Image (cartoon, rainbow, N blue to C red; front, top):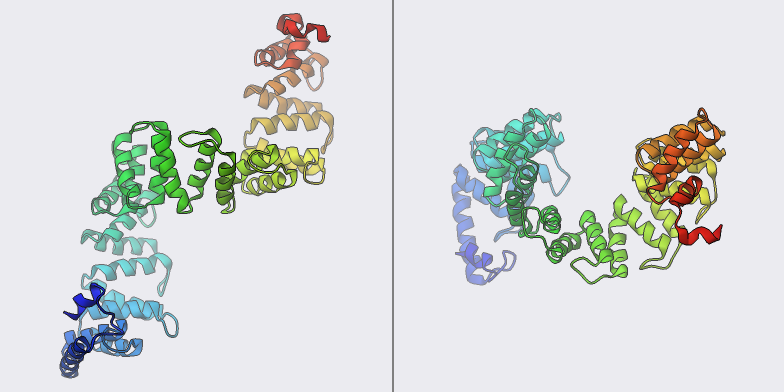
Length: 455
């Protein structure tokens, strides 16, 4: 009766009406009498009253005293509550060894929450040696009893091969069980497996369905993924406005990836009124969380003065933050900024270091710049052979500037055996992409007649 009154908000345990308090006092007296006679259930009830302060002054010490009496008689709920109190220990700090001891007693009797808790303690190495395999075993016991959090956690362990042999099929099986019980994280993760065709048949329609179920519960990762699918029309009707709606929901929860995508939609005016200022706002929110893609985008906005006052210094700062996380475009742009001394002190040697990091990972612009610095001896010892190697890497990826420079190296015999034929071949490839210098080198056939008077 009193429980229902509190649940409905008609009273609080710390300030019960006189009649309700009288009822609780009578119940406490009855339980006290039974507990003093050794009845485990009464002892457990008293422990709960003191733990949660229900009708009595909250007192962890008294809660522990009564729980111990009940737990020592094998009362499984008292064992679990006791383990939980030792794990949290609000007065003097946690006692994980005692928490493990009591949680194990309850877990061995089949208490699902105790099994899940014990799994967590093995997973985190609290009170026991960290042991992912042992954690998985306890999660499985709880999962097999239908405990949804254990099912989702076990699915994740199979997904990543933690404590168990990696298995997409088993991951999908456990995620589905939790998802069907309404667990939003499991719904999202199951959707990811379906989208990728891992352990289940690939289906964008099914993936979108599960993402939507999780998204409707406020799962930000699902909202972001659903936004991506709607934007691309994968498994659902294509709609920029709908994509923006889902990106915004995830972005407003602080998800950096969604904030970045929302910023891009504002830049492009897709599904929303075009606004460079709004784009900058969302890029900045994500960038301040350390998301490199947003940092690079924000740097570009500062470089060009789009939606924000132009600032080489701010551009350099944000490009460097992204570059320090390995963002390829930012690595190259940081090299360019330092090479040109825009917003930072000019330093060819340092510029080469940034170019090299990007070039070694296949960034075509950085490979072209590496060719330039070796050809000209900027920040490195001049070396035509090495310059040709870098120009060729970029040229093979279709970079017109690199193709033009490679053509010049062949024509002039720098770093390669001189060959007008090879030079012409590379000039043609660059010219066909509109490279003006290559067109000029090839002659009138590739020049725009309207430009001839210039020469």
